[in-house]
Amino acid sequence: MIKSRRLVGMPVISVGEGNEIGKVKDLVINPDSKVVAALIIEEKGFLKGQKFIPYSKVSSIGSDAITIEKSSSATKGASIPDIVQLTKDKHSLTGCKVVAEKGTVLGTVEEYYINVEDGSLSGFEISGSFISGIMSGRAFLDISLVRTIGKKILVVSNDASENLVKIDGGLWETLKTIKDAGSSLWETTVVKAREVTGTINKRLEQLKNERKKALEHSDQCQCSSCAPSTPSPKENNPQTGPAGDEEKISAAVQNNPQEEQAAADEKKAEKDENHSHQK
Image 1 (cartoon, rainbow, N blue to C red):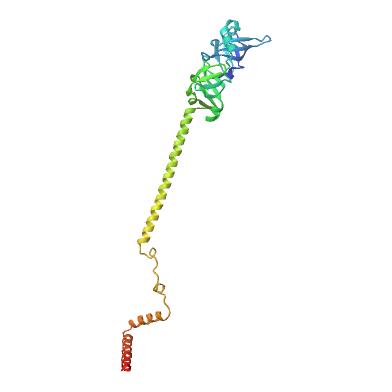
Image 2: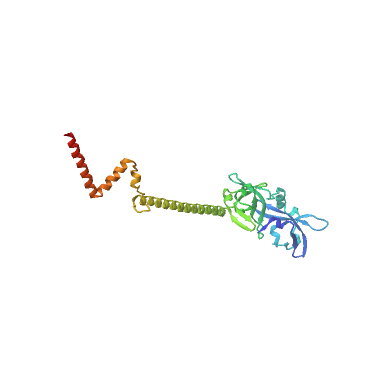
C-alpha cells in the first residue's frame, strides 16, 4: 500500500531499454471499479509530451522508481479513449467531501492509498471538524465503507463513522476501539468512585457506633472517670447564722450522751420552777 503523493513525481524506467522515459504527472481514477486506471507521464527531453501508461502495464513500484517492460507501454491518448475519458471526468479524489448515507459530513479527503499489486484503492485519509471532535489528527477510511465515488463527494455507509481508524504518528486505532476504551475507563472510574464512597460511608458508620457506645457507657458506669461529681453537704445546705448553729449544737449533743443527760435535767428544772410560780 502506498500513498498517491508518493507516485507523483516518481521516475518511470523502461527495463528492456534501460532508460527513463519520464516522470509521473498524475493518476487516472476509475470511480466505478475504484482503481487507478493509468499513470499520466510527462516525457523527458525538449519535445515534452504527455502519455498514458495503463496500470496493467506497470511492472513494479519501488521506493524510488516505477518500472515497465518497454517504453512502448506509454502511449498517446488516441489508442486508449476510455482512459482519456476518465481523465476528462477529473476524479481527483483529494478535496472531496466524505458524506454518510444519512447525510452526516465526516470530513474531507486529504490523501488516498493504493495497493501497488493491482492499483486498486485501499482507503482514504480524511480530516475535518467531525474527525477533530472524536480524535486528534487524521483518520483512515477503508475502501469497503465507500459506496460511491463522485467528482466532489464520497458517499460512505452509515457505520463508517464507527469504523474510522486513527492515524497518529504510525499509530492506527479504530474509533470503535477508542470508544470501547473510553467506556471501559469511565466504568473503571465509576467503580473506583463507588469503592471510595463505600469506604468513607463505612468509616462514618463506625465512628457513629463508637460515639453511641461511649455515651451509653458514661450513663451506666459509676467509675470515678465516668460518674458525675456529688455536691458536698455544704453545697446542698449552705445555711449560716443561728439556725445553722442550732443544728450543729443538736448534732453535737446527739453524739455526746453526758451532755444529752445534762440538757434533759436542765429542761426538767425549768419546768418545775415554772410550775411553782404558777402556784
